[in-house]
Image (cartoon, rainbow, N blue to C red; front, side, top):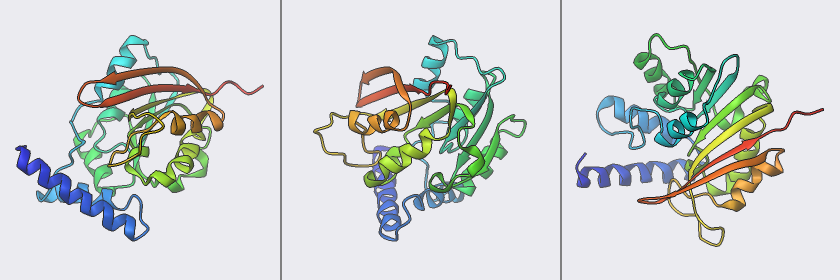
Length: 224
């Protein structure tokens, strides 16, 4: 995509976000982005058609093993992270609020073992609570209004089973810096909400190339 076209796309998505938030629909804009991409009138700028490099590097370095374990991908988009996670042996469920995105996942991966499901992060099925051994959160928190961060992190934390883990991939900032833009960057202040919800931070990797990024692992200890 040419720089001018990319700039126009970002500006158009920015307007969709503002309009959606003004209507009190914090995630309502996702469906329009994916629908526009299907119709040829837009693109999904965060869809790289391959699993996240930050996830893949970590999975390989830690010898990630999902045999006989369940996993959930939050805001799965076009499914690449979910398929990558399934490749490590997990029984993967992946959801997105956009029914167009979920339809595309099923079309892209017709022989998939992943269970793709349309769902709203702010209103997830009750049976998902405490169910998953591994949860992958890749910048979904940062695509929602800043004032929802504590609530959203509480919901994500609640999905993690005893002895389970959540891997958080995000843009990063210092706590004293203002959270601006989409995706807005998380700081230690927001990441602390995971620990306030019963998880323990066990790893944090920081990267700084074109922008600052965090890769953070939290774990829920087994309840006795």
